[in-house]
Image 1 (cartoon, one colour):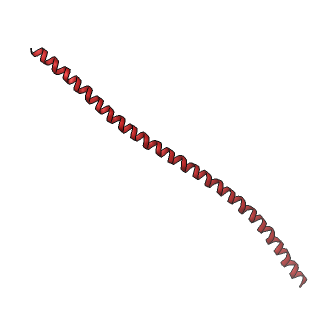
Image 2 (spheres, helix red, strand yellow):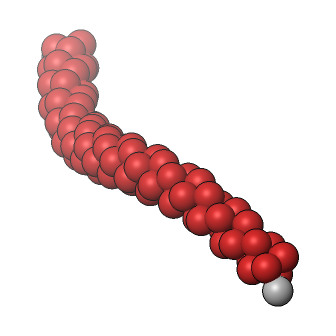
Image 3 (cartoon, rainbow, N blue to C red):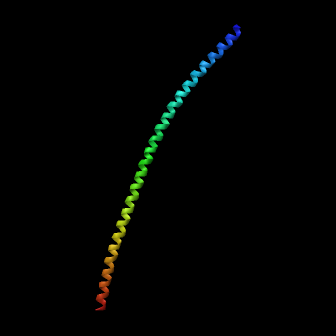
Length: 92
């Protein structure tokens, strides 16, 4: 009977040590998980900022190209007017 009690006591001591090890590992993993969550949040914020920059660049590019098209139309109209004037001078 005494041997059984000692065997059970040794098993309990082993389980207590194992529990302490697992608790320590669990705490370490929780800390690591929190750090990864912070990194994920930081990267998500960075991604959102970059998406905003892309959208702004797209808007700027669209407005620039609209301005360029209008500017080129005006230049082309001016050149066509000059050509018409030259043709009129040549015809007279």
